[in-house]
Length: 85
Image 1 (tube, rainbow, N blue to C red):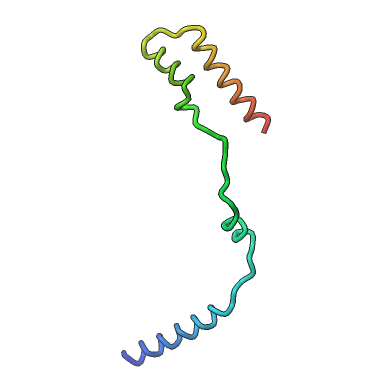
Image 2: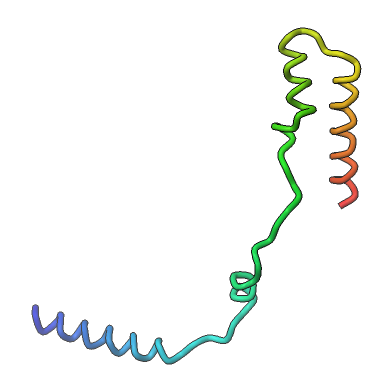
């Protein structure tokens, strides 16, 4: 058994030496990984103050027209942006 372990160690060392010298040129993945982090302006509507106010009014059983209108405007603006992409 020790002889097999010695042979395995030699083979692994050989592979390590050969693979250490061969470096692939940078590709698209390397460019993405080394590029600056991307930022987005996308945010969740779930925690938006307009949605929270509507949710509170709905829970209280008292939805005002201006609260509903603000929610519909927010949803309309969001849908317009999504459709225009």
